Length: 112
Length: 112
Image 1 (tube, rainbow over the protein chains, first blue to last red):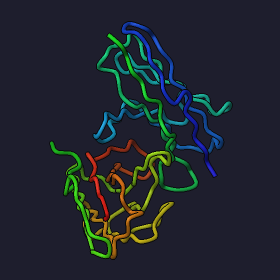
Image 2: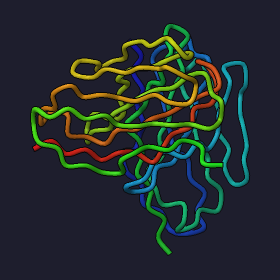
Image 3: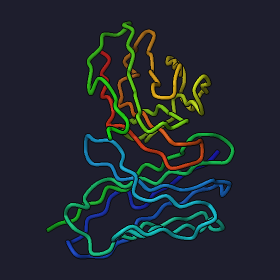
Image 4: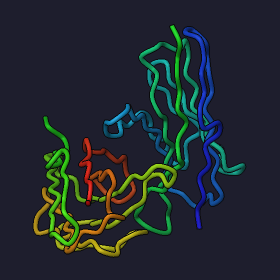
């Protein structure tokens, strides 16, 4: 059974800092990995999708990497802003089924 | 473009009552999903549908049923609600079973 772990569970940083969020998984048989953002009381917003054949994807200040061999993905946020404060979730689309398997998320607070 | 619309936004329901959570998408996506999100347990798949006319069971299907009569709608029914079904329910969709997923804003359900 796929297990997805996100460390740390919570992170607090000062504004302007570059930071990395981590996602590890146990089964590399995946179609893709997706990073989401969730604001309190809201739905999930898709940030980046990395296909299994890709190594990284970039969108603005966000860069996500994927290393299937080591079972790891990272989400890099450059020049963090208070508006980046949210919970960040990674999710894997496994080849063995149709579902996305989620980590429990990293709650990020960017302090002004 | 509305994307995915869920209704109601929130609901308090007496135990034993029947309830249908509605989900409609206007993106012509083939695949649709229902997840529940609980503190400490993360997001778990309840049911999914890879295409209109087909459905499948996810990780936690007991007590829930779904139907997929057309591409746009994917209602989730609780036949006889129990307090353990208190949760936030998210509907999601993707073009196919292995492409980027998009989520609705959620339905907060409290069963008393």
